[in-house]
Length: 276
Image 1: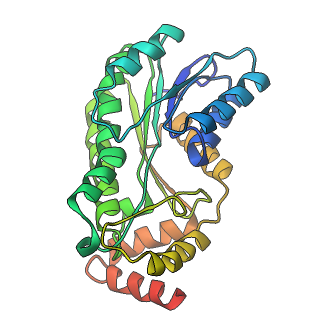
Image 2: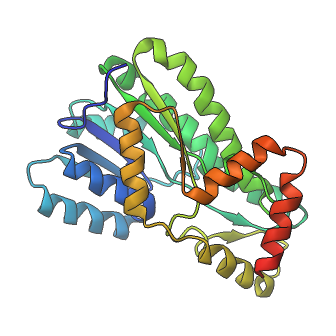
């Protein structure tokens, strides 16, 4: 499969109002890619969109406020984006949410919510845009999983389940779409400096007083700037890499999981307890 061509392409990016999604959108604009930006944060999304329109007036940049936690087939979004863009050639399923608490502290509603945003929305968005992507020559899909789509530490049962699901879906999808000329990259970011830990929802049975320390602990591990992650992601798209693990720590933990599949959870949990 030939390298992906960014100039003149149109990309749909979810979670584009901040974090990795915003950084990906800004990097794509520099690469002369037209943008359809999607997020539930209307104010943040419009700020990003307006700034990109001022900086790149030659590009077509649209913004679309969508709540990915709602059950939808996103057919209306496809039509809305199609009205302003000639064709979609890149889909970046980046939007995601975090959920704090052990499995015993989570309600089924908590789990449904994180699965809806982190997994079902990825599947539904891919299903909705697949006809356009398979028509476009040399199209590509990016699904952002997580380090916790490679390892599953204690306290992350629902979040890890959603991100492991993204990984499995992406790997199967890659095999199905490669003969049709569509690439698929699954991304496993480690400690990227975003607000995901700060904005994490707490499970129904979690003590907020105890959760504050855990949030600060996880937040302290998020150190790589989002723009660095975005550059790596788009370089992987350009070269059609199927799998991208970001940060040295994430790569080390991935190797640990493969070498010690029965022991890594105990080792990771001990290390996290020492950090508290």
